[in-house]
Length: 558
Ligand SMILES: [Zn+2]
Image 1 (cartoon, rainbow, N blue to C red):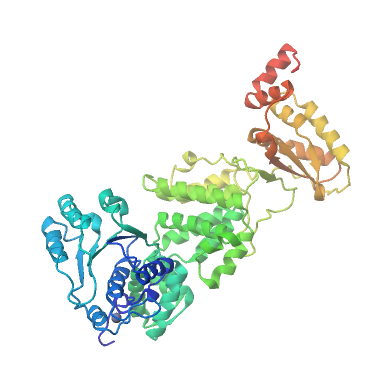
Image 2: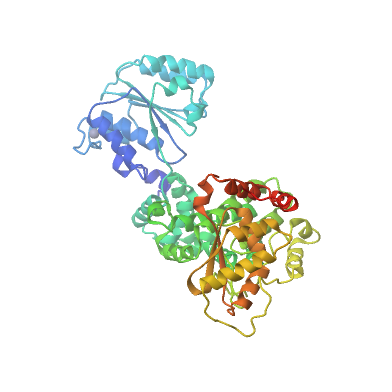
């Protein structure tokens, strides 16, 4: 390549139209110019590489253009425009406050302010990273900003708005530049590829855009880097190999393992990723983003927040269908919590493995986290969330709380986790008594009858008894019944009891397919206690000991 110019410079926008990803902002600026409603000072805020300085330069050029085009853009042909484009205009002065932040620096700039322009209408002063000015420099500048001559216009740019003095902020019109969306960046990279005769897979450009994290300048410099090591043939594989990006394939595999509650498989996938040299925190935040993407791609209203490339969108949607919202909420929360603890953790690998174990437990009925709806599976059926793509065998999970990190931390981690898992008896919710399957039909009244009978037999657990007396089963489809409980405590009691309760009901109703769904009744949460029975019931929910007292003293609630 002769006369090689880095893409970030070569493709620097020269009109508002060509600024990537800041449409509404550039339209506003163009309108202000067209209507001659210019302020004396502007503050451009936003992350690095999103077009602040480019916009400031285009703005300076446009307001000085002698023959502006009808669409509000600079003509790029008049003497003033040519002077700007050839970087010899006297109407633009730039100061990088990051390296020139003294009083003298600002004075030499403000000295220029008084001299009117020789050509064009305005002298534009751009101060980059304005928050870096020293306090004295700030004060010296403030005087000029308070009483500027008519021909002077200031554009201050900063990545850290909160560090700019309020006295400056109050004198500026503020424009907030946003991070550039992945789609906008990919589109621009496609344009650049075309201009440079580079062949690029869309997915590869998507990875570059993600890596650039919202900054077009960074995206273009990564692009240049990739072009050079791929000889102008940018493939997805080449990009992830060379940019040390974790292939999304791993996140899909992890999600499959998690959905099927397969801790072993998840821990092995993690080991595979770590062995490729990826950092644990990278995996954790990547997984959190993955769950987040699955969440936003589920609903049309949040689809605008979904920034993955077109070619794998279907894959996301297909996986998202298998994830209920509450699972994704919890998964994101767990991953985020793990991310926060990562730095202070002394055993980072274990922490990451623990996250995977916790994630695997979300979808399991015996998980401690109370969910609004739980499904107890009948004997002999496997988990409903087994993905077709998962190659590893599906194994039941250790019960929540039975494999605490304390146990695991003795000895080498990866093997000790395996041991912890293996040591755990593979406990089924129901004894495997369903060798001869029964599927007799039964009535709601029969169900309620046996339910009540069971409740009456309970002697020690008054809380559970109360829950069963107050919350009745309602028969629904496919031998499934639903119990609407009043609070998570009742839900948990009932869930624990299901180990005995379900076999009892199945045996008596001669149907081995009976399932129980427990949900917390929504209306009850808002209901106020009115009658004394209800007040009593409410108090008992808070403190089950009350019931014991009542029984001991043979009292009635009324
Ligand atoms: Zn012009």
